[in-house]
Image 1 (cartoon, rainbow, N blue to C red):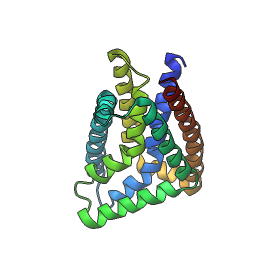
Image 2: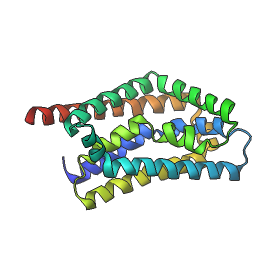
Image 3: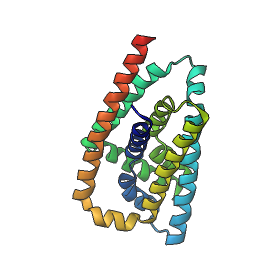
Length: 209
C-alpha cells in the first residue's frame, strides 16, 4: 500500500469511527436549552479534549502497548475485530442506541455541566473504536514526519466533527431520520471492510513474527 493510499485509509478509518453525522443529533440532545454561544463553547472544548486523547495514542500508542507486552500484530487483530463489531452495530443501528443512552445519563446526572469532557469528548468522539484505530494506524506511520501527518489527519477529523457540531441543527434537519439511517449503514459497511483488512494485516504480521 502506497503512502497516499495509507493517508486515505487513515482518514476514512478515523472519520468513520468518530462518525460526526451520527454525533450531530446526540450533540443537540446534550446541549438542550443552551444558546448558540454556549453550544459553540461545548463543541470547542470537547473537540480539543478528543484531539489531545487521540494524539497521545497516535504518538505513544505503541509504547503504551509495550508496557503490557502486546505486539502491534496482536493489537491489529484485536483492534480489527473491535472495529468490525462497531461496524456491525452501525449497520444494525445498535451503536446509535448506546450513544443515546450515554447522552441521557449525562443530562440527568450532570444537568449538562462538564458534558464537553464526558460524554462528548470521551467516549463519543474519542471512543474505544477511534482510540484503537489511532493505535493501529500509528503502526503504518513510523518516522517523525509521517507521525506528524497522522496527527494532522486526526486534527482534520476533529475539525470536521467540530463543524458538524456547529451545524448540528441544519445537518440533522437536512439528513432526516431516513438519511441518517442510510449514511450510518453505508459508513458501517466501509468500516467493516477496513476492519477485515486490519485483521488480515495483523495475522500476516503474527505469522511472519
